[in-house]
Amino acid sequence: MSFIDVLAVLGIIALPMLLIFVQPDFGTMLVFVILTAALLLVGGARVRHLIFLSFVGFVVVVVALQANVLKPYQVDRLTAFMDSDPDVRSEGYNLTQSKIAIASGGLRGQGLQAENTQTALDFVPEQHTDFIFTAVGEQLGFIGSAALLVMLAFLMWRAVRIAAMSRDLFGTLIATGIAAMWAFQIFQNIGMTMGIMPITGIPLPFISYGGSSTITNFMAVGLLLNIHMRRFI
Image 1: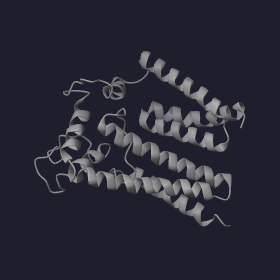
Image 2 (image 1 turned 90 degrees about the vertical axis):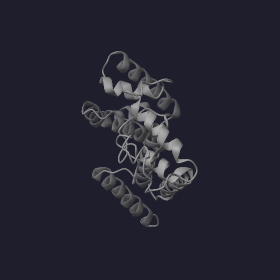
Image 3 (image 1 turned 180 degrees about the horizontal axis):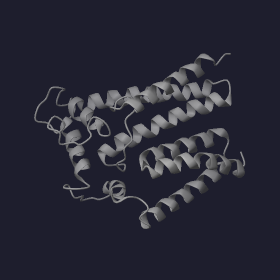
Image 4 (image 1 turned 90 degrees about the horizontal axis):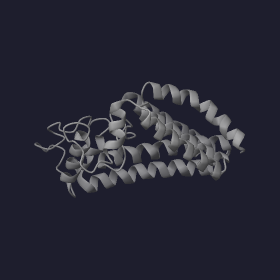
């Protein structure tokens, strides 16, 4: 794939990404970025082209932060996780409460019916959607969280296997895109609850509350099953 082909792909994806950014929905736009990069890599794009585009993207993000293109709350979300002493009364509240909840879970958790916990007392905002892993960590502990990660990892592994077994490039690209989408959403969602990634509105696949997200993920499962079914046709 030549650099012109790569630019053509970026030109096609640029419009929906721009519309999503204007909404504003920075988290979903990041999913598009990762998904596009994975498809370009599997589709035959050269690594040096992707590295160059990554550098350009980094410069664009820095310029956007300096030029106040992002809204103040978006900037606070992106920078709060890097602050060693965030203001727990404002932009650092969510992250601080999330860390406390996960840490209090310990090895086996506080239990699903436990009272007087961070999640039971609603100290963690959006614990049923964006911060759902906080509830998992506090109520089920390290063992429950690890079990959830194993199940999600198995799901991604199967998507990668289906991509490798596909009989054509089209099926490979679809399965790769689904695997990349899930991988980034899982890493980003869990990472932001522990303070190693910026806070975004990205849900945890199959776990976070939300109709459109759940429907999308099950549609993705259907596509994977179809690709796997037709691998010998």
